[in-house]
Image (cartoon, rainbow, N blue to C red; front, side):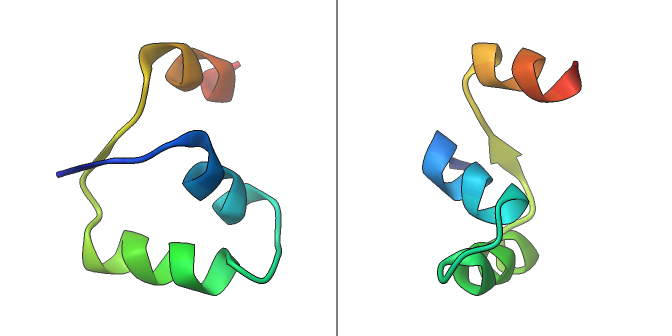
Length: 44
């Protein structure tokens, strides 16, 4: 399990030069945790 910040999550949702790296990280380590406030914001 890794703790990710908003930048890593943004790279997945907003395509940019860092998106491939974020996708590779998600494939390699799919068990992520994020701050509670961020989880609620993405579920809305």
